[in-house]
Amino acid sequence: MVTVKTAQEIELMRKANLIVRDTLNLLEEKIKPGMTTRQLDKIAHDYITKCNAVPSFLGYEGYPASICVSIDEEVVHGIPSSERYIEEGQIVSVDIGSIYKGYNGDAARTFMIGNVSEEKRRLVEVTKQSFFEGVKILKEGVRLGDLGHAIQSYAESYGFSVVRALVGHGIGTDMHEDPEVPNYGRPGHGLRLKANMTIAVEPMINAGTFDVVMLDDGWTVVTADGKPSAHYENTIAITEDGVDILSL
Ligand code: MF3
Ligand code: CO
Image (cartoon, rainbow, N blue to C red; front, side, top):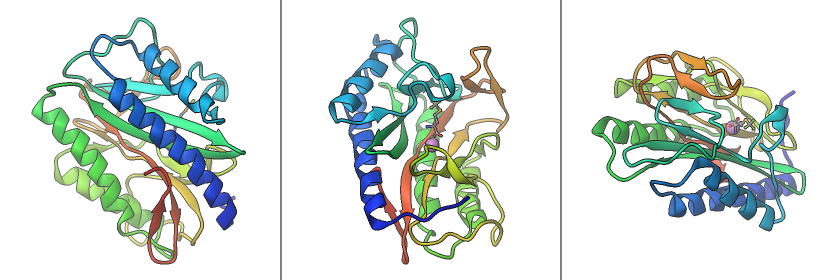
């Protein structure tokens, strides 16, 4: 069921999302070659908790950490590990969720570690911009196929591909609510958005094929061809004349 939120609910979601945003900014400041992804998880967990919020990923369907850290060919849901080191030249996607007074925030960024290849840099920039190309057409009445098409056509114009197996989602008292929000689509198709719907828009863009594979840990999703992937996500509220990005 797709719900619309009250103004009061949206303000609680903004708080949850600003905690997520600030946690991402803190990690961007701290992330350095030689750190482990588990250290990043601890910094995030401590910060979210200090803000009187709950790290929503921890224990979600058995997920064992507070954030997801997905490096290079890892698309999403990489599990932090004390044996996985950050290295110069990597692109590191960090996805974070928090619950504040019962309402969810969810956002992701991809960080470039030192000097990265030209291909990786372009992939990270195009992934972020594909989010903005998508949301700039949004307002009440626009359809999800229009959003997906805007993201997809921008990413593909750079020769990149849009992951199909994973999509964005409605968000509110649950991290994952209806509707599904694909990053691909056909103009004029799909659900028509209403003001005060809240959704997480999260393009996952691959340098090569859009096909992905799940690793044996049951969580980490990697590109099928081993080429890099980037992720960028914000939680947004639809308004009468545009969007309100809650996690920026
Ligand atoms: N934040 C992810 C999303 O954008 C979901 C994380 S899955 C979890 O939908 F298990 F880590 F929580
Ligand atoms: Co999400």
